[in-house]
Length: 317
Picture 1: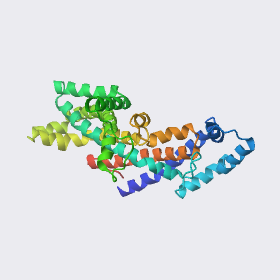
Picture 2: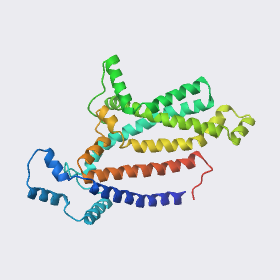
Picture 3: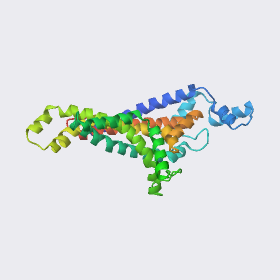
């Protein structure tokens, strides 16, 4: 197992290197000049000489290969440079928003897990009954409703029926837990319900497949309690594809909630992603893409480790 962990960690390096090369080249291919864009938006008329000096200050006048080597050397030293738009350190800009997006992702994943696993198992055990049909309707409704639209409905219901709106300014949980949860619980519910629909259907289909296996029928023939058969024999094996779905959804939520963040007035990584791309902020966009890539790689790594815990038949060499 230790050999497998070391091997997976070493495989992260070429994967992240490929992501770095790809995003670096793509940002240079995208039309537009950050220097011209920046001063055009500010409404100031500047000369070509000033624009050339600004490009030199940002290092954009250097050859592309030299820019890439300097950027990669900075990554090795955990120095992602400064934002070309705000001139603030990239790590500081990301850190301001990371804990917000991370908390929403964790809370939404918890909501999705608490909804999907019990409902999916219940629907499988009560197949083709009214319970199964009710769970199917619940999950299909979640798939049909975008999370941002559900968020708008939540805000309207809170305002119309309770004359209350969530706080508009973010408060860290260590400063005021109540103000923090009263703001983030609603986007977490909207996003969690949306993604629980996918996991519910996956749980149901996986449980139905496992319940038809020979070892489950053998356990029942031995006279084991139904609860023991379901929890100890069926659920662990049925959870493998569900873990994969929940893990990928969590990785996506780190930077993929652009519209939902806009609805709930959250200044998270999703908004920062869109702003940095629109402004052609090379250093910020490159750092955000690397962060997203690392999140997906690391979450997949944790999912693979959970496989061995849920299914004792799996052994990594």
